[in-house]
Length: 108
Image 1: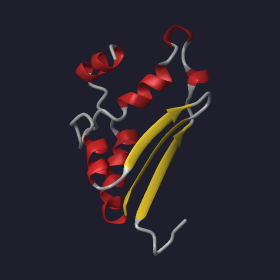
Image 2 (image 1 turned 180 degrees about the vertical axis):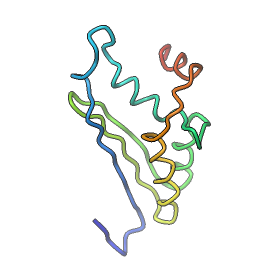
Image 3 (image 1 turned 180 degrees about the horizontal axis):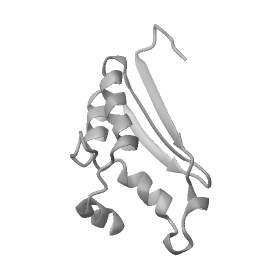
């Protein structure tokens, strides 16, 4: 959908995995991974860099984990949409999932 007069742009990604996909011995794994994707990627390794970029450009980010899907989304000022989409896409291509951030998230 496009509105040439809009000052905001948005994108979302629904992943076909949710609570029902959690292994019996790892309940909460889908929700845990939802959080981990925001904590750095190969090209944007700083934890929270995407959230900071979007926030500084007048936007918002969020995600939710349901029973069968996990949805990630953001909105941002039009001028920064392309850069935000580039960073956002790295969540699903090459998340870091590094051990230090994993431990922090496990203990949160």
